[in-house]
Length: 454
Image (cartoon, rainbow, N blue to C red; front, side):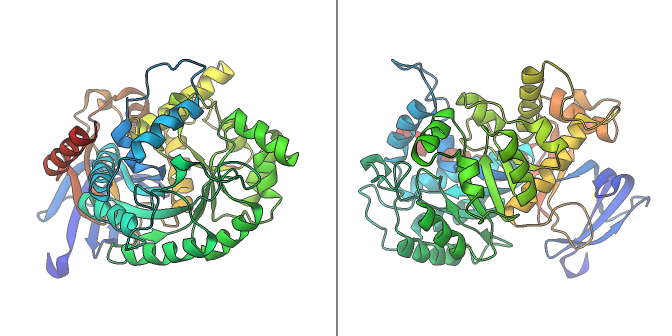
């Protein structure tokens, strides 16, 4: 094709207006230059069965992929997020920049294989093992960008501001020494992070006050200002202990406290927001913020179940993230989200909005829109949009005889693995026949890294 163009033809494609047959996409410079529907395939077309937009992964701690499965032994007391966190601190305390990059590249490749095409990397590993700054303040941001480049995934980098160990500005503990910044230092880190991603296509740099435990209200406002017009993400109301501690400190629940600052708007992503009451729910919806749900991690940590049914019914916006990366699977995140609601409500198809509506399709569309908003990008298969695409394999047994929304239902609820055929990121095919094109090299480096660490 002239001018670096390529043509992709799909039997069916999910467009913003719905499913359309016989769709040709002409891709140039990473974007969909032209979209045609109801056209016959022709020579020069690369032919596939089904195209859906790539899913945003709005919340990841990539390095935690390296400790997946290592915290599944019961401790001496009631196991919870807080006991899991101690293992995480020990694991992250060992990582050098090369090791972090290798683990992140593996996590990003697995995300692409499952249908995620952009990641929001909630990045709080900034300092050396002794807590001293690296010669380049953005060393670890450079490594996150390198992992994104190696894998081909889109990157929204969210450098984390972390200053305290508890509500009210408590001094950080020694195990948090690799995360800690003051506001002035954090401004320098943001500048370094922007430089680190400058050579990546359509990278975004936002900011992430870690949690109300880790920032004071004064620091929160300053960090939000430093973000400019970029996305702002924060952990909030993940565990009941967090809610109880916040009430004991301030007399207010975490989401209530945060929203009363007047800072939150549609650039914000409230990660988890698991334990909210009806008033807080209404306030989140009114703010336009996205609830960043991580159902696999929330289940693994025993956090609780977000009230997704009333939230969506009230007009709330949500997206999904892989968080701890205990298991990386876009469809599984949506499946666990719906199944959690079914268990809580003792009902089926809870998150479908009306009789006859497809649960999988409504979940997919909601998470696509909310995830893109939270990561500061556009999404969807349309002219001018990035060519971030996922092709589903109609030869997969779970896809037999399906079409349109039933394809999404079957992928999410019935396919297990292998339903993703190919993935394009800005028109570059990064997954072919279900496997990342650089998996062998990425996997070899990852295995060598884990062998050294463990």
